Image (tube, rainbow, N blue to C red; front, side):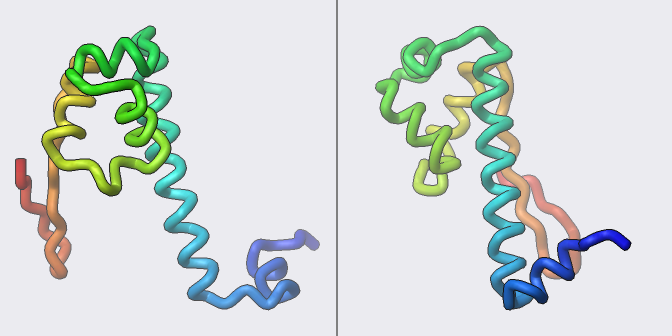
Length: 102
């Protein structure tokens, strides 16, 4: 018999809400990791990327560590363009339909 995540949650009194918060945080952390890896795969330091974006290195660090949660869409767009990519902003409606916003 295997010890499951559900068993662990039950044994440690983890509520479904706490579990959902942990999963959401893990997803955010994974996106941040992907951002950093995209920069690294392009052979760029934070300082080099910042120069391409026209911002300072601390701003790039903040984006990579906070996910740009407080960043303006324009700043995130510059980040992606500095990597040679583009930023797609997509909103999801309650019925599941997606709308491209930018």
